[in-house]
Structures are given as structure tokens and as C-alpha cells.
Amino acid sequence: MVPVSYYFALSAILFTLGALGVLIRRNAIIIFMSVELMLNAANLLFVAFARSYEALNGQIYVFFVIAVAAAEVAVGLALIVAIFRSKQSIDIDEISSLKG
Amino acid sequence: MTVDLILFFGLAAVAVSAAIAMLLSRNAVYSALFLILNFATVAVFFLLLGAPFIAMAQVTVYAGAIMVLFLFVIMLLGAEQVQERQKGGWQRPIAILLALVLIIETGYLIFGRGALSAVIEPAASNYASPQAIGETLFTDFLLPFEVTSVLLLVAMVGVIVLTKEERKKAD
Image (tube, rainbow over all chains, first blue to last red; front, side, top):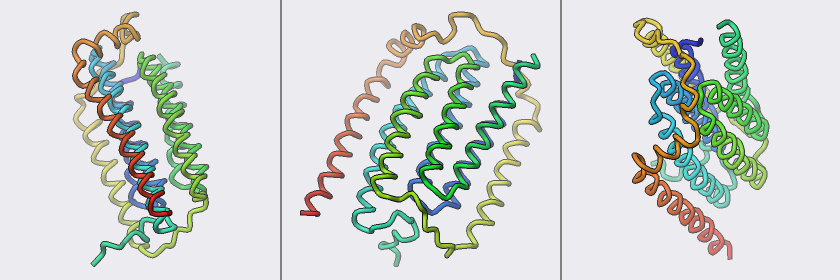
């Protein structure tokens, strides 16, 4: 069978790729998708450790994370639509009205 | 034993390459489709880990509802083609360097200590059945479950308010 540490490593790689996406991309929607990738990597680790300890709590937490992610995506995409309507762009470098 | 390892590495290769393709593709629609592939692969991992309920929730909620919402917004805004100006070009090498540092540190923590050598054994047949999940959810986690419903209601009202305000401005 597969050791838990392999799942840990895969989750770490996916999380790092998500963090890298947040840092290097300028499209607000792609940055949002990278955040979803990071949440998903954390979910994978939750399920792997729940399986390792034969406990159900980890899977329940994943259920809650999915629910919170759904709410977050709905509000975030509404914000992006609102920003696009006022700025005509979703490039995050363009959104600098508060810059002194 | 080897079949499990082959399955794991094959799926891991698909998941990681889908994530990389999501980061690198210029077209936002392709990025969303690669992310759906990644979510589907992670759902298969959940099945391998004996979590059928979570796997189905992942497919319906993440790969279904959330990504359809993403695709809808991308096409609504017409933002498929990203016009990325490389103004802050110094950020990219630093970001890649920091990501490398992060992955090396995590790898050291996972494999350098040797404390995580536990192997995943086949579980009891009724482990994480939807019935067991439901019983835990509605007994031990009843309060968080109710709070989640309030959270979803707040998100729904918030989305309606956000879009309605824009419509008033447009008039």
C-alpha cells in the first residue's frame, strides 16, 4: 500500500503550485482558481490522514471546506464582475486606485 | 502492492501536470478545464482513500457547480485572452525561488524526519460509508453543520446585494 508521506508530498506539490499561481499570474480569475487548487490540496491531506488514523473527522472537515469554498467562490466572482464593470479590466495591476 | 503504487504515481502525474498546465495556459477557459481535470483526479484519490461520499461531493460541488460558475464568469466578461503586461518582471523569479524554498522545506519536513512512515492499510468495509458520515455529521458536528447553512445564506444574500448595486449604478 501507499505510504501517507507520498500523499503528503503530492499535496505539498499541488499547494506550492497554487501559491505560485497566486504570485505570478495577473488575471484575477486565474488567481482565484489557484486559491481553489490550494484548498483542494489541503482537502487531499485531510482525507489521507483521516484514512491513516481510521477517523471520520477529517472527512467531515473536508465537507465543511467544500461548503465554505462554494460560498467563497460565489462572493468572489460577484466581486470580480463588479470590478470588471467599473474598471473594464480584471488585471490586478490595474486595480490600484487606493495606491498613494 | 505495486499496483497501488503504479496507480498512485500515474494519477499524481496527471494531477501535477494538470495543475502546471493550468498555471501556464494563456487562455482562461483552458485553465478552467485543466483545473476540472485536476479536481477529477483528486476525486479518484478520494475514492482510493476510501472516501466515496467526499469523492462524489468533490465531483458535484467542485468540478460541477464551482467550475461551471468560473466558466460562466469567464465567458460573461470575455476575459479568455489575458493581456498580461510584464511590468513587474522582477516578481516572477522571486516567486519561483520562494516556491522552490517552500517545496524543499516541506520535503525536508516530510522525508527528513522519518516520522510519517505509516502505510495506509485496507480499512474496515463500513469505514466512511455515507451512513457513517451522516451519523457523525448530525451528532458530533450538528452545530457546525447549522452554521454552514447560515454561511451559505449570507453568501447568497451578499451576491444578490453586490450585483443589484451595480445595476442601480448602471441606470
